[in-house]
Image: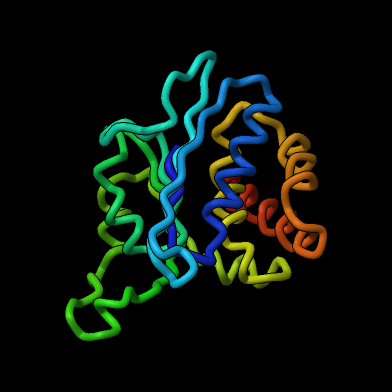
Length: 188
């Protein structure tokens, strides 16, 4: 699984939660993170590999089973990591990178439509809006995890119990609600 976004969108927290829930379910798990000016809205990529035995934390291009992206442009940037038949779960949020803000480049138009055309299994949702309804727009990352969670062999109770270990107490209720909202979207 690859998780990508921009600094401040909870990509690393989501990767940690995913890794911990998979380890708790008995999988060998390896993770890797790349922080690109994360505190200033730069790209952040986390890779989570799991299975009976995992040798490397890195996912080669073209081999990710799923990509979770908290921002549209970051989803486009990681398309080449997705394997044939893989799935992208993407927040429709847009964060203009510095080059766009400075007028040196243009934000790609139609990113959400392109992602949906590439595969009928891809999902693009208003994760911050859903998370806001759940209690805090900053929980958009857990909306995406909720959507992903229904495809993994881990029960909802295990996810919530792990969330209680990983998410700071002040943010727990909103994240739990956002996660459950994501599961509802995926199930219905």
